[in-house]
Image (cartoon, rainbow, N blue to C red):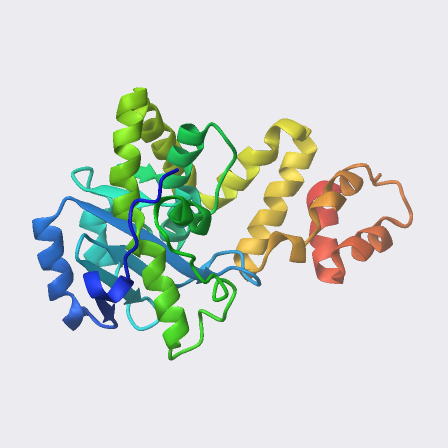
Length: 285
């Protein structure tokens, strides 16, 4: 891929940190004047069932915005834009961001274009990360060391803010370049369709989405145990593996109610006497 051009972030786009509803006027003005914007999110999803959204980034042709979602909830403001089909949203790996936006803000992403899907179709190759795609189109090497930093800590560091702005800075230009290539190859509609399919998977109920990924490999009783585990994890807002590890579901389904050591075996898996009682009452009454 030919390098298009080299651009230094802050010389070309204004950056804005939005930490309250009072700061939304500049965003509104951009949304009045442009019908394409890009989206990214930074979040923590290590010790909870649902992701914890730290920031949401919106990018336009001349402005980049970071919404501090720990300072205020922007869902009411964003709803009419994120769910509006008249705006085209550009993302990288849309399913992940759609999942976070759905579960943290209650919003459904519609009318999207995924540059990762587009690049895969263009190159007829594998899935490429964001930094790799940016490197294909710009003479820029992104620093990704902040990827796993603590996004729930405040204040955000200058390195985190730079990282977050760069994650949306190049998306619109890449989309415009990819669009020309896709039109020549007559596959723009295909990429748009695949992008929306990924968004809709992210828009699904998280529990159902997780089940759908596995249901073809599960017997009926395993599906029931899987959903029981999900419901407990949702109630406690912990990862499902904190309740029962996934590779132990099949083992639990093979236990017998006649086994004198049933409770002991279930406790060994769950590590929780109360949870073991709940499981046995449900599946081995």
